[in-house]
Amino acid sequence: MSDERLIAALDFHTMENVRSLVSVLGDRVGYYKVGMELFYRVGPEAVTWLREQGKHVFLDLKLHDIPNTVAGGLCSLMCLGASMLNVHAGGGYTMMKTSADRLHEEAARLGFVCPKLIAVTVLTSIGQKDWDGLGQALPISDAVVRYASLAKQAGLDGVVASPQEAALIRKACGPDFLIVTPGVRPAGASTDDQSRIATPAAALRAGASHLVIGRPIRAAADPGAAADAILKEMETV
Ligand SMILES: O=c1ccn([C@@H]2O[C@H](COP(=O)(O)O)[C@@H](O)[C@H]2O)c(=O)[nH]1
Image 1 (cartoon, rainbow, N blue to C red):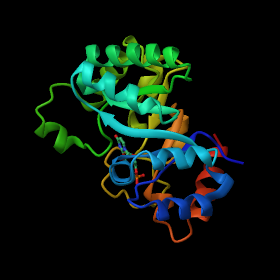
Image 2 (cartoon, rainbow, N blue to C red):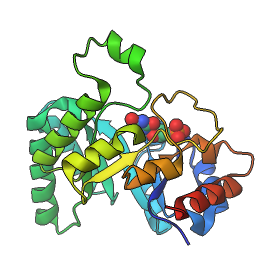
Image 3 (cartoon, rainbow, N blue to C red):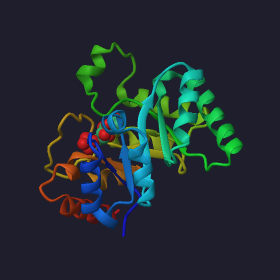
């Protein structure tokens, strides 16, 4: 059976690819991530089709705009039935608070189950060189914890962060806060464009609640076997 701590990223641009991978993975995976590549090409069908297959969906569109615009966008996306939506914490406390408040109000008004709302802290592709180029004053890990604490104060359910910051976030934000970690790579796998990475077991041990894994499964010669190996490693934690 599936382990709902594993979220498989469907970074495809056709539904044919989606249907094929979901069929190969079968009951192993119950939670999928729909991101920009798929949603911008295919649209809402990507989410509604997965929901019809009984899968949970993290709709990872990383909204980043002024408070009213992000809140309105989230209320529109909520109608698709995803279990989790996200915004960029860099939009600030007011944007996150307005978003969380409006999403809860709209869900109550429509009688929907409110999706979890999480905030992207510092992208897992950002390494020290990129960070320095942005002229940031704080170390990456301090900035991530600061964003996570702001997200919690604003009423969000959790954050997206690298597994390397999971332990610090867990300490700062408590046991119920969602810590969704991309940048997860089985030992020896290609890092691709990710910078702040850890293995599945290390991410869970550090306190991640969910692991987002794309290419290590999707691009494997045998995606079913790759998912089985990851799930087996996750079972050890
Ligand atoms: O900081 C972030 C936020 C989101 N992502 C997304 O997660 C997956 C990771 O895919 P891999 O193939 O396992 O690298 C991808 O869809 C990203 O958009 C992230 O990597 N980092």
